[in-house]
Length: 258
Ligand SMILES: C[S@@+](CC[C@H](N)C(=O)[O-])C[C@H]1O[C@@H](n2cnc3c(N)ncnc32)[C@H](O)[C@@H]1O
Image (cartoon, rainbow, N blue to C red; front, side, top):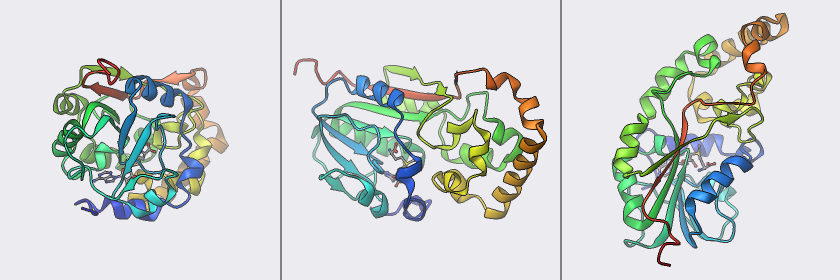
């Protein structure tokens, strides 16, 4: 129960330290998730990590297979478990949430089935690998990311169908997004030169360091010469870009009939 087939919890045990400094919950995404949870009083947060995006005022149970991540979670109710075998009876919670985690689960359908079994409403935030545009970092510097992300992320229509989602909400990434996952710095390219920023992302953490460092050196050169800014002048004037991040909502509103 405490190790996914791809060794992901071990990855998070490695990258988890210091995660909270870089992965600061973004207030705009928090507001979107809180609205989707719609007044749920009991919530299970699966793949909870350090507890980002949990609703204020609800009784939250955090689930994660990584001990290092759970140790960074501030809550009192914490359970070390994998999404595909949640140790709760049917219908235990008003809502289940899963934020940027379903791509790590060893059995996506089984995990989503578990969310549906233990809660009345389900709220899942993920990324659609089929969506375009993709981040310039992948196209121009680290195409290795594409193969890795396509292997672990499932196309959104498959996730939505397995979850029984009735609502799909786009979340264009703001230029000043505070949560340092890979896409966050689309308009702040210098950030990718910072090893601490890269360490907080499971994508970079799983690539060979020599590959990442060589790409960072090329980016450093393009920033110094102005080549990056010439190529991406259009991005510099934009406040948000849709890169395929979506919030999926399934199940009735917890407040309905409560
Ligand atoms: C990118 S982090 C997201 C954490 C948190 N939800 C957030 O938004 O900050 C992914 C999390 O999924 C967890 N995870 C990995 N494998 C899992 C599994 N089989 N079941 C549940 N969670 C898992 C990792 O340990 C990690 O905490």
